[in-house]
Length: 384
Length: 178
Image (cartoon, rainbow over all chains, first blue to last red; front, side, top):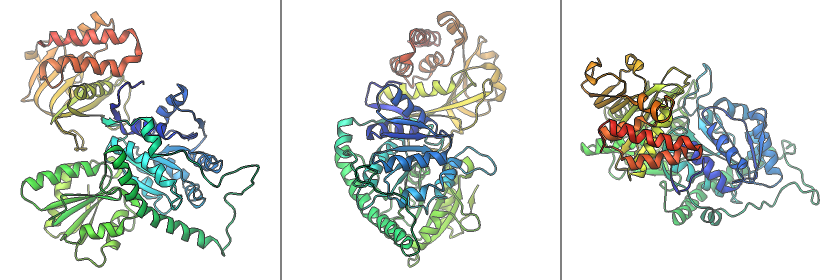
């Protein structure tokens, strides 16, 4: 597909492929899986027609895709892969190996539930299951945000004080397959925002180094400690990069960590991530027009978790409802747990609503019900 | 905001059609959103696709439960169409609109899109042509916007593009467009 103009109507997946092309990765290990398939398809087009100079490796599994991503970064080049659902689960073993080697890899995830029973539809259980593996996680609401977030992801990952891999998450089908208008930026502007990747450490026969050595009990602990420090650095870097992005391209998503919608005098609010934020915007606008003091917190960054930002945003609320598209079976939703921890010294009540599992719609009716529940002071529930 | 449901059979091009409609609305200076029914579609089975058109950016991300308009590409699918439509249901059929029995308060407009497609394209490719009827009846997109959208979506496909453009125009006229 040849696009002549800059403003296009594109799906979330195509937006990601366009952004990746502009970031000029050199290696693309790919193993397609629904609903992420359009990303490798488009990138494959770009490599084939010469728009992108990169080696596309048709690997035999997602485990190999992640391994090849590690290998590519060990040689000192920018690389990219994309996956979803059980594909992410199959990568599980390699994800912390990439992060502990401090490789600034970027991967897009078209969020799809993890099978059992088999299901190809959207929820966040694939990415949420990897929340502890040292990957930064961003969630996107629109095709434009998916495009923009890829550019910011590389910039953040490659900051020396961060040096961690990033997952850019878009809701499977609900964004990966939704066509809508967006602005595709030109190469020159992207090059000035994201300069060429020149890592200090990479494999070089003239200057031999080793990656991924064994860490004995006397050093393993420190590896993880340093990753935690890097996550804390990322919390500081994300708003800075966001401000830079806004200066260059004129768009912003809150401060890059969270975005506040109608929160100023709100008494009740939702915390949501991904596409449910869009529908929640419509609900908040409707309830506001009826004079109700409601608001919305968009959680763009899930890892590192912006606990302090959430605490400040919820300070004056009576109750907050979390739209969790995932459940830690036997406990609660991942976001709910983190919000509860962040608000442990605040008066604001936290109610978790397990939502949208396996592609169940999160529609306006359901979100209005959440606000009604918060207002009545009732408990959160599974928003079936 | 206006919502459109497109119903066709797998392989008939309802998904492409909704995408072209979204591009057309955007070319007209509006905002739009197009998406297929999220699922595992099969050749020949009923396939739904949707389009939203509005004057401002569309935040709504829920599925489409009712719509202002529907476009039925294959009239044998009428028995599996149950969504509430509030304005007009456009049906690809050689019957008179009064002959169609549907439990709806919406207006029904039959347009023989297949006939035009066979004459102009030489094959029963109705998905793009049907948008001509939608433009004429709803006035939510212009013929010019549609032409630009078809060129963008199908630009690399050669002579079939010209034929589709002609079919769009013919169906537009047939449906009363000026």
